[in-house]
Image (cartoon, rainbow, N blue to C red):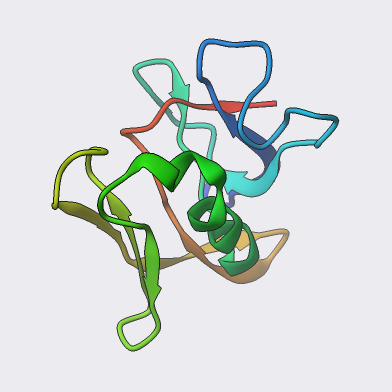
Length: 118
């Protein structure tokens, strides 16, 4: 793999329990891509549209005042900054190269959520 290419991986959010959001109940984790970078020891993944749609549909958002969404007009994913607040984080599309193929991805939670590679 070229140093400028991302590689495929499976990811989950660490909730400090044995069962994560995307790898619990026998699920294999959420497919994504990584350059192997870390933030405070946590993985920094990128996700294609199918995986990003799974993230914003996850039940964990149920208690949040602002619901996660995809703004199709701007091609941007929006997630709550904190459960009780009105602020959102916006995740713009990027391009990564995987096995010589360019893939459009969103770095949802990259460098701020507790992602782990599973």
